[in-house]
Amino acid sequence: MNGTRQITQAELSRQREYGDAIRRLFAEREAHPVALVDTFGCQQNVADGERLAGMLKNMGFSFTDDPHEADLVILNTCAVREHAEQRVFGNLGALTHTKRENPAQIIALCGCMAQEPRVSERVKQSYSHVDLVFGPHALWRFPELLWEVCTRRKRVFAVEQEAGVIAEGMPVERGAGVRAWVSIMYGCDNFCSYCIVPYVRGRERSRTPEAVEAEVRELVEAGYKDITLLGQNVNSYGRGTDCDFSTLLARLDKIPGQYWIRFMSSHPRDASEKLFRTMADSEHVARQLHLPFQSGNNRVLHEMNRRYTRERYLSLIASAREAMPGLVLTSDVIIGFPGETEAEANDTISLVDEVGFHALFTFLYSPRPGTKAASMPDPVPRDEKQRWFDKLLAVQNARSTALHAACIGKTFRVLVDGLSDDPAYTLTGRTEGNRLVRFTGSPTLIGGFTNVTITGNTTWSLYGEAAAPEA
Ligand code: SAM
Ligand code: SF4
Ligand code: F3S
Image (cartoon, rainbow, N blue to C red; front, side, top):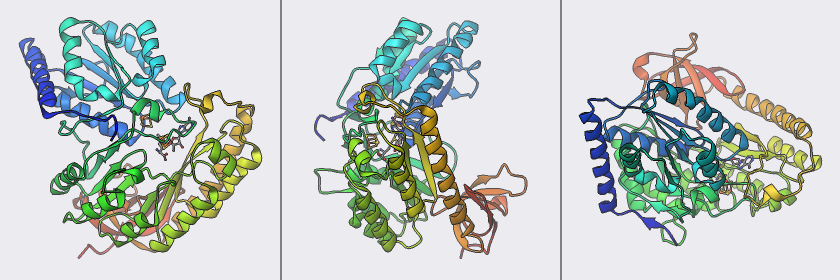
C-alpha cells in the first residue's frame, strides 16, 4: 500500500460537520435543495456516485433527473474513451442554459475526467459557469468543497495529483433493488499502454479484508442478493499481504444467507488456478467470469503491456472451464490498436470464435493523451478499423445467439429484479451467469430467487416462464 493515505475518522467527522453546516445554510434560506448526480463510465464510478448521493442526502438534498429543477448538478465523468469525454463537454455546454434560468445553480464536474490536467484547464478557461471541479482523490472532501462554493461563491478546483486515498465509513445511498457494488480496491498499477485509468485513479490500493467483510455482511443482512466486488484488477487484491483475492472470496463465502457474489475486472496476468478452485468450491460465488483479453495477437498484447500471451489466456480459460463446467464467460476487447494489422485483428476474431464468450464488450481504440499508445504511429484509417470491428461483432453475435439458444428447455435459478418493460413478459431477472431473463410470473417474486424455464432467446437475452417455486 505504498503511498496510500488512509483518511482518519477525525477527518471524516470534520466532513460531516461541513455537511451539517450546509444543511443549516439551506434551512435558514427555507430552501429544500435538490441535486442531480449524472454518472458516466464504469461500476467504480457508479459506486462513487452512490457515495456522492450518500453525502448529499446527509446534507438534506433530495434528488431529481431534471437539470432545470436542480440546485446542484454534478457530472460524475469517465475518461476512458474520447467519445465519453465529448459527451460530457456537450452536457456541460447545455448547462449554460439552466444556469441562465437559475443563476444560483451550482454546477460541478467530478470523476476521472476531472483528474486530467488537460480537462480541468479547459474547464477553467472556457466553461466559466462550472463552479466546482474535483477528481476521485478528493471525493471524500466533497462536503468541504461544496461549503467553499456555497459560502464564498468562488470557483473551486481540487484536482491535485495524489497517490490515492482510502476512506472507510463514508455514507452511501445505494440504487434501488437487490444488486450492490462494493469497491475492494482502488487505482491501478498496470499501465496498459492505451489506458488512462492509472493516471486518473492513482496507485493500486486495497481495503482491508475486515472492512470488505463488514460491508458485505451488512449488505446481505439488509437483503441485497447480488453483490459485485469492484477493482480494476481484483486478482491483485491484497498484494504484499497474507490475504489475496482467493482468500478474500473464501472468507466472504462464509457469510450466511442467500446471495451471489460476483467480481470485476480480472486481469489474465494475475488470474490463477487457485482462484478458479476457490470459485468452484464456494457456495455463493457466481460461476461467471469477466476476463478481458483485449487482443488475440501476441505482438499487440506485448505493445499493450498486458504481460500475458494468447496461449496463456487460452490455457486459463481451459482450466477455469475444467474447474467450473457451464461457466459463463465475458470479456473486453479493443480493435484498431496503433499499428495493428488486419492479420492481427483476425487473430482477435479467431480467439473470440475459439472461446465462445456469452457476451463481449467491444471497443474501437481511442487515443488518450498522456498514455504511451497515444504517441505510437497509427496509420490505419478509421473506416478500415470499422470493417474489422464489424467482422468481430458478426462473429461474436453468432456465438452469443447460439449460446443463448442452447439454454432453451433448461431451468435456471434466477434472481428476480423487477417488472419488465416488455408487455409479453412480466418480470426481469438475472441468472447466476448474469444473463438477462424476461419471463412471466407473479410480481410477488420480485426481490427473491425463483426457477425459470427458458423458452426463447435473442442475441443478448433469454425469455422464459417461472417454473416450480424454490424449495
Ligand atoms: N481494468 C480492466 C481490465 O484491465 O480488464 C479494464 C477497465 S477499462 C475501464 C474497461 C475497458 O475499456 C478495457 O478493458 C478496455 O477494453 C477498454 N479501454 C480502455 N482504454 C481504452 C482506449 N484507449 N480505447 C478503447 N478502449 C479502451
Ligand atoms: Fe486500464 Fe490496464 Fe489498469 Fe485495466 S489493468 S484499468 S486496462 S491500465
Ligand atoms: Fe471511466 Fe474512470 Fe471507470 S475512466 S471506465 S469511470 S475508472
